[in-house]
Image (tube, rainbow, N blue to C red):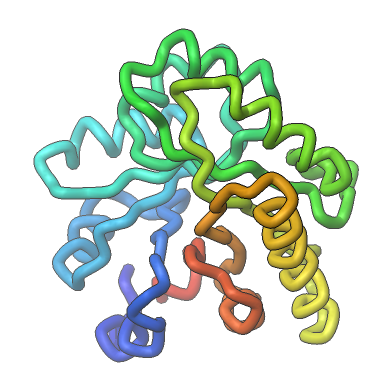
Length: 210
């Protein structure tokens, strides 16, 4: 169920920031309600759920984001239906996109800033070389970096984690003379800290619902 003050809440999000509604735990009715409230960017974590919701909402002018880990054996079902992939984390997945995508796919590299063993992502110290390799792929448009902060981090730690991704982006832009315009960082518990450190895309789930 959508929070009752959703209109007021949306007014608190800066106009130059893209709010991606994470819809992992909500149904199509709630998504339709969010759409009526003006949210047009939706993010799904799971392939099966995405495909079902996509088929039911393909008459809407929705920008689709895949924000979860995308397994290579399921990528073929997804890559030609989404507008943004937030979780590009391997050259093997990049090769699948290169071989099977019918359009140039806007991709975020998922970066492992904190090197957590249970999280996906390219280790931060390998990202520069990963970017160089991606330049060989014609079907991949690198638009940004994505990260997830450590759960239950305090505000100072959150600021430090998000700052690290921004500084990594800035460093690679300068060194490789390229533009990487977007930073996908910040979820319901930490999006304010992410915004303070330059997030352009925030992935909000629970905070949108009652």
